[in-house]
Image (cartoon, rainbow, N blue to C red; front, side, top):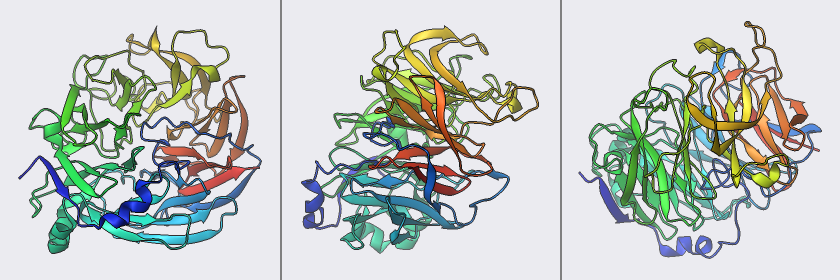
Length: 500
């Protein structure tokens, strides 16, 4: 059994030729958090919120449901030609990708998958990725990945890849389907290589243990075990569920969280992005208790890499409810050797990057700030004053709940819809990765009240809003901006295209 292995995939090199030379054809929104650093920053202005242009269910079982929707939905992907690729749940454990014309909402094609989710509590996300804007990758069974070239066309070259060798998969299909499952969204880097976490539930013919996989743009597969990423810690048994790998801007380092299972301690780890050789790991600590932080399979937190290379990763507290179940946004240098100022909310969130020039009143020293939700749950001791916040990674304040020194909240907005008792409580913010619009200096933020808001950084107001649904308690979802400025938000199991 190997914890670190590289294999050649059984795929002709010619299949990869169209994508290898297409680095200029970047996707507008290529994966979770927009890019491999998960910054959430759009290249175009978001259209005004005049109407819902079109909509489509992302969950044919739960769309329009009441009660709690304990499922994470994969991020829509959008090509430069405005094809919107939407992951959709079609059954208890069945999925497909639906392609739509972003301008008109016309259906283009669908791609079915026989992927099955790993063991879970909340249903994990089904997260595809666009590599260089010209190839769609989406999860298949047994840890395999399906691909489809020419995503803007109704037909294109397609196939199936296995990071441990397609011939091994084909010879042992049933055994591998039953024991190996992709457990994170797929991330594509700037060179067209892809990365994803996978869960292994038993012995298998490929000798796999749970870990991180890579498939290169030329078709070479490799993997490294979760325990090896953590320096050989044998208590570490998995890559964190829903934790989309993050790759630095240079494409040289990949980051991912690992743990011993849900509600256990863990590490943030890094590896050489070309070889997956482990580079560094840092034990995740609760800034309040000084003890271990906790990683939850029900979270969708993924690392964010700032423009300076610093890494931000959301965790849960040591135990309920020392920080009102808000968790922490831990902050490290790129080498994971220095622990820096934490943020006071980190549970189930991936911070978005806000350049300082988008904040006209900011006078601090940081080149960029971060946007995250800042819920303060009434169910676990908070007052129900749920905010979205822009926080300063290098300037501090004292957290009023724990007394811990944390990132300063530079700007905030309280939710708009009452949810008492107690008096003053409001509905939660419903974003795990917020879209940033640098052109209009605003962000697109979604709420469990069923309304989508534009947060204007110049006036610190919600300058626009649009009603989507009556609102529902649901696992957090991403917001996205297309190449024509159409805004995409998921609410109550439905994807809404919003614009003028």
